[in-house]
Amino acid sequence: MAQQQLPPAQDDYFFSSYADEWWNDSSKMNPLKSFNPYRFEYFDQFVEGSWADKRVLDVGCGGGYTCEFLHQRGSRVSGIDPSPRLVEAATRHAKDTGKDIEYSVGKSEALPYANSSFDIVTCVDVLEHVESPGLAISEIHRVLAPGGVFLYDTINRTFRSRVMMIWLPERILDIVPKGAHDWNDFITPTEMIAYLGAAGFTPLGRLAGLAIRGQNKDGSLKINPTRDLSSLYLGAARA
Image 1 (cartoon, rainbow, N blue to C red):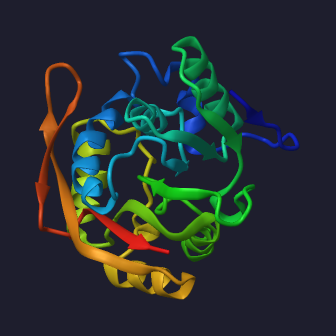
Image 2 (image 1 turned 120 degrees about the vertical axis):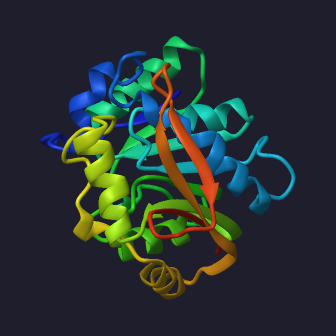
């Protein structure tokens, strides 16, 4: 399992403060695992055959939740994140649990991979946090093989999303760390389609939504698929 080393950088990324506890059952980040079964129920329709042996890159991998989810499906997984601390946590957990996942430190706007390196790129709960979503999406297109698939979710910039993704989870239910999201960085579907078109992608299928309905006793989130795109929405595109 390899980890690409980049020049030292100050790790002031918001989520990096949770690196040491990322994989603890009591971690503030643990509820994020709840999204993957619902995300991939939607994503699966855009993947030809199975995920087995597909070359998959997870952009903004954090401490590795989605990378390990994909590894369990038999994919050849790489993950990249701007936080050295999170990459260290992800690498350590994969090693401790015997998973062959390649992690690298880097930004989505400058992916350290050759052209056409991957069959699939996933990018979940990330685009609303990056400095330049358009540049990140262009880089994702570059590293995808021709005909490869980009699978993503992000958050719409609406009054409802301010309530459902900031006020309610961060300030009322306290299930998301305060400051995790900035409403001004949310991306409307119209903006997202424009980014995809500028990068050379062809959108696939119909966008879908996910709604957080609360939290279960075990700490996992109650999530419902929905056609409502006013908050968290998912999409796919082909390179």
